[in-house]
Amino acid sequence: MSANAASTLDHPTLPIIKEAFTDVKLSAAEFRGLTTIICPPERMHDVLRQMRDDPRLDYNFLTDVAGIDYLKYPAKQPGRFAVLYLLQCHKRELRIGVKCYLEPTLDTSGILVDPALEVDSASDLWPGAEWMEREIYDMYGIRFRNHPDLRRILMWKDYPAHPLRKDYPLRGRGERETFVPLTRESR
Image (cartoon, rainbow, N blue to C red; front, side, top):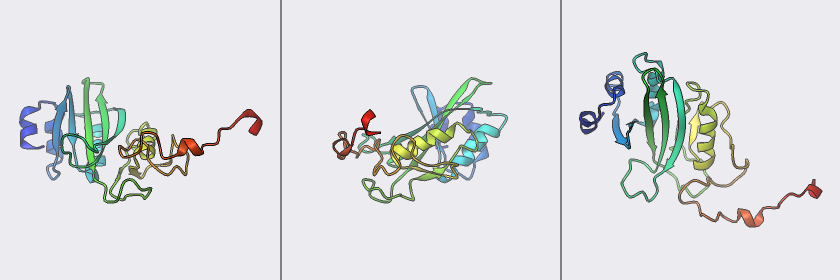
């Protein structure tokens, strides 16, 4: 954990994670009562596994997985995109977030798969992560390594973009104009 974060945050999980990952540069932040551990994307799965398997932590429930696009965000972030896992420990009534930042290496307005926008899937740790990770892949283009079924879940298979990216036009790219509505008679 960074020196400033460790000295001001008192979440009981932070010292245990700091002890378990002495070789990883971790930091922590708090916003509106939610403490979030920020870790490198290549170690995200290890941190999540520790959070679930360490009996001192026992984060047994995955509440949510969120994708975030920080394009034009007022405060500078370590990467344009982030993946945030929200965890809960029922035994101790604790909640925490685990986040990693991802910086695209390719032009994000295109339909190319950017290898920098990839993180390990947590669906092997919490099966409920499977559909949430698929939604993030569909809407943001962030891929999840070792995901059992990574395909679009909200948009059709050949949809040429990721609609929740902030550089995606609010009115779309002409999809509404070229959409052919189906009627009962057209079946």
